[in-house]
Image 1 (cartoon, helix red, strand yellow):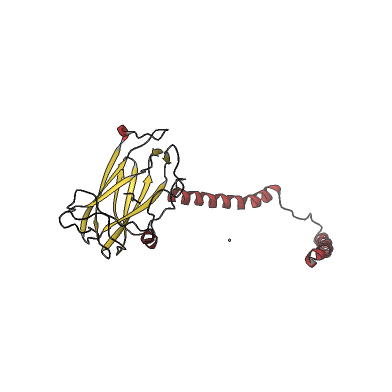
Image 2 (cartoon, helix red, strand yellow):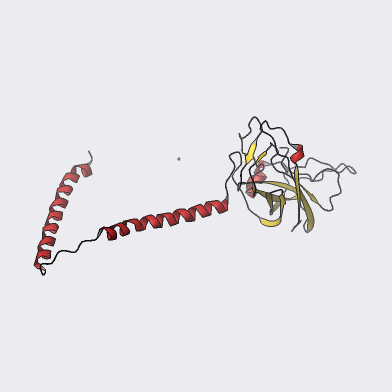
Length: 254
């Protein structure tokens, strides 16, 4: 559910140091030659080409192993679409379900208090369904494409959540307040600021993930159902209703 909302003295010393190193190196080389000649007259042992090659290639094999490990780690963590906010995944998982080949993992993040009245009122008494100071709960959706790339419209993957005993026709109310989302460490939208484009085509690649959260009235111990919908778009951003996909998940708000 998406909301209505950082004079070089050392340079002068280098020739002297270089000359000194050459002198020492020459002396060592002469000394080594003299020692070699005095020991039995045999030919000095030198590394064979094969030995040298083996010694030089060993570090390359180590580097390849490191690269492979890094690649595995990157593959496991997935990628972020170029249009998405940074991935956030706090909380305790309470549900998982699929919409076609797209997986949705649902996390209960935290409970806080509403900073203002909600948008809806109870038709029987005209009082807000969520009043300022009421407890609200945040849930976070982590959405991963496990199939082929899919072109999404501006609604991306749409999710509607409702308590099983929700008595109203309209969906559950929510509190729109950026500071509340920041305090919970979640995104209020899956799409990053400035990511809007024309045509409205947002490619969701294989293995990519994004996340967004929502909040609603807190009812501890209540079963809840999540209904997800995907309507792909064509190259011009037109909705392909014939390719609509749906999925459902259930859980309990603790």
